[in-house]
Figure 1 (cartoon, rainbow, N blue to C red):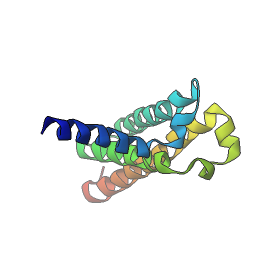
Figure 2 (cartoon, rainbow, N blue to C red):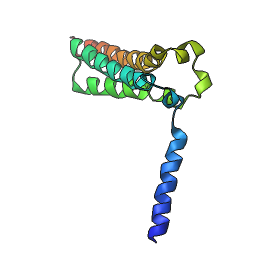
Figure 3 (spheres, one colour):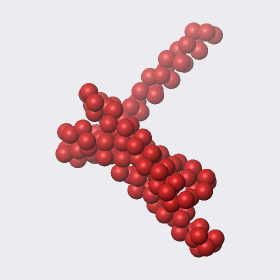
Figure 4 (cartoon, one colour):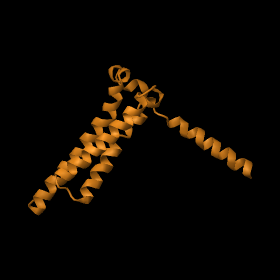
Length: 121
């Protein structure tokens, strides 16, 4: 029984490795630039939400959407990223930063627009 459980755990760990993104095969600081771009975009969206005086639910939704927008590039094939962005480390930073800021900023804008319409703020 324990043998099958340990084998199941090993197979589960190996199957998770199938989802390793192409970004993870970069070397040096390139590996850190994608998560750094995502983290900085979340900070930017949080700051934007606070400056625009969005209430708690709006800030939470904008952060969730910003984080969700950074997930699809993890599953892109390596060749789907343009060579210019693959060969420079800052390309990985932009891939993590740009979609998150755009999606989170759009949610902040929509929450702000809705609160102005209904609450007159």
